[in-house]
Length: 459
Image 1 (cartoon, rainbow, N blue to C red):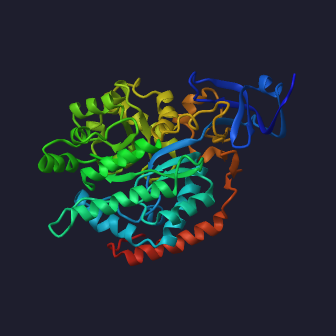
Image 2: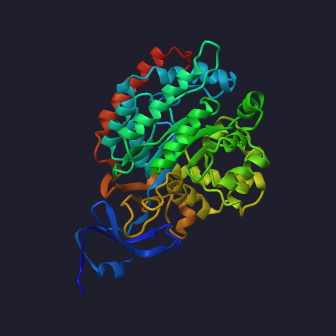
Image 3: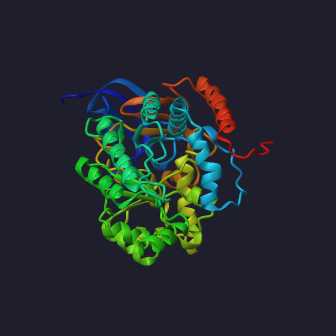
């Protein structure tokens, strides 16, 4: 029999494929050639048909697909993490104006490049190999440069706001500027070139953009096999604004202007009603849950969230961190446990569904289900080696349950993206971490100082 030549063979691991059959190989092997998976399956079968230039003993590892963070802010937050107190009571709008926006505006282009790098390193070291940015990037070129250096896969977009909120604002001018940004960024960073980093027409959401901006974003996405992403209805302020100004609830309005669909990702979706949930399901719009952010922000998700019902209706639900700690493994258990408690039903969101949110569902939301999110021959070589020789893993008895309810990003030993080993033995291989952390400390202190946000007692 002719042997297939491959670059690397990892042999003897437990492999959680997340393929269509959700196969798990207890004594498996995974072969890589270039940036693709050449073969995956039982160890004996794979070893008999491939000849590898390099072999890795995988017996202490569990292999999973790389995780997909479907909503994260990689600027603004990483360099000012933890500074803002959690007991402020300014209200959502005032909190944005007093605490959030000034931090973002205080970032220079160099700051955003650095912020992107440290966010990418944090994600990769916890097993996230691909993410969708939340839409708050001010200096897109510098951010892309930082991400390229870190070796992560991403869909990003510049910050656009195209709606007039005061009589002094010219909505036509604001809309035109927003549309130009959307068109130019997609042309500059196309997804069809096979690049790891590509631009989407990403909107802030809420009430920040006019109907024309929304429709242009959807048109660009439809024409280029991309998606649109936006925040919506974390608080009651979104439906209140839409009802007062447009006479419809947010999801009803987005449906009316024709922008719902399977290439739209809406994040949070806590304050929606039954008719909105039904419309989202009917249009196959993607819902992104950020459970930690929802709890920290007191959205009311445990009382009002309809995520189990949306999943039952067939909606694709993906998982995001929102930038509040980039360990997506921690968020899997939180997303599942939150609704087990809310519904007082332990069958709600079992471990398999939670893992799907972080892998195949995220890939589907990012329009990349044929490339990432599962382990199969021909897919991109984006995967994670979890070290089971650790106290949070041993004894290894039920891998699926342990991935969601026991382990977290601390056990991520190695990570591959596009066939490149970007994390090895718990350290990033492309970035000098010591230098990165020192630069982040200096930059963060400077950003807080010049942002003008209130001083707090940091202990």
